[in-house]
Image 1 (tube, rainbow, N blue to C red):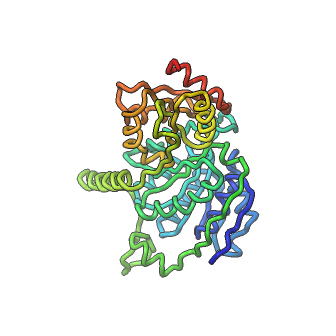
Image 2: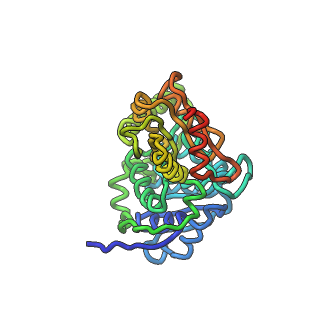
Image 3: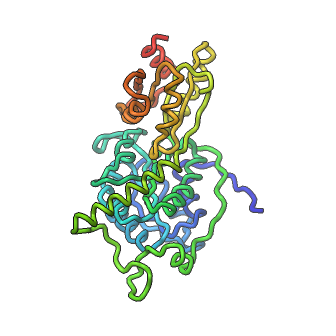
Length: 361
């Protein structure tokens, strides 16, 4: 039995350690605050000498995502990481990867925007990640970590889900989780797959060789409308399957809750502390934390919406996830938003004040 390996590290460092231990074949990235430690840690660990994993700093974010595209097309387990403006530059490549039905892992450690914005934390890339920041009708599997442990755990999970459905996966973390330090139980080591295993497990991969069952060319171009529609319909069927099977969330204090908070990432932790303090004041608040931002826990929020008097979404943005919450519960349920922007992180008392203000508690 493998002995647990426990270390104190940043969320970004946990991503790097987990990528090596998950058996990734390659990482292609470009430095940008507040996620630069992912690339820096991989360079320090030098996995090319131990597992053979390729680690390459590309000349740009656009180059990095297209390297991921090429690696994914050949059946390799590949990933990239960046922060908000860098992920914006990757959107065309992400759309191509999704359309070509390839697995890949993208990590976005969010910072404030729009534009260059600030290097301080944000959750304002929710729309970009969950609605498809590139062009066309596509989706990403989006995992939202709230702890450094989840930063590590979601690397292997993201890769597994991505290969299972041949849909790109994204770890959407805010800068707080990327930069804070916590104790982490590192994931177990999984060896990289052999070429024979890749050939067996990925019959869709391109080899460039004739006479094989594998594809010779990977492309998302289709000139005939009927075939293009069939391609899109096939993708939509897969997305429905993911919605049915892969919703993940956590509930806290919801059994007797009269009001509900919905929050993700580091803000869910702040809200949990606010709920504990509110309950000490006799206010019955519950929390639902979406772990998968897509597929979104719509049915679970709809269920809780029938129980509570009102819902508050708390986000580090101007109000993005609130749209999905409102769609889940309908127009008759009062749903409000509280958020801070510019890199300002609210404290529990601000959350309690927002609850009292909106619901006249």
